[in-house]
Image (cartoon, rainbow, N blue to C red; front, side):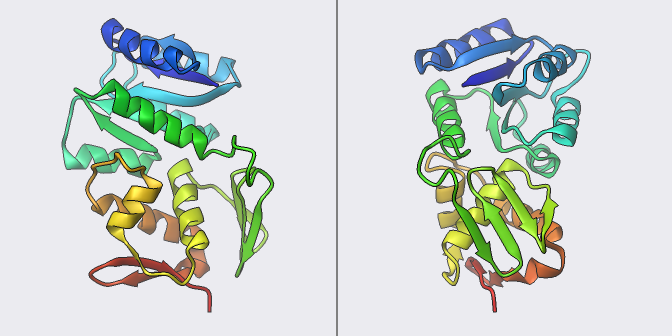
Length: 224
């Protein structure tokens, strides 16, 4: 699988590339936002994007906005900032993972592996289609329909909905959702869950009440 690594720092690109190549990933590099978009749209085989925020010509936020208008490809953002507002902005724009510099290459690789492992490339469940209430979820195609209409979910929103449906009727704590959907090595704030649930409910429209809030704990997916 091919990964696009975007960062204006050569040492960062080399560090990330070396670790990815050792795991047999193919790596394409870009030094700024404009080059990133050129390479992204020129190559339809890119499975994931690792994207720096602070870059010349076009920053990572602009690149992410452009990609999300046209693609659901998973995006991992790299940033030197650790501000909550920046992290929430990334999730609002559709980022799938958020890693603050300096970071551990091994942790980055673990998150890359986890994302690509859950994108339907594994043989088990490739053609699995789940129908529940008004929702049709296709794990292999990574698509969701509500009342027969296709809705546009980010990668992480899809994973969150899948986890809810797979555990329908079960009260899930925010910590458990973080561990299962964001992977075991994600040390983020549990408010990340609330941000994604809010967006997911908005996209489910009239069926947003399928996701029930369990006050002081987390959420439960329930179809009455």
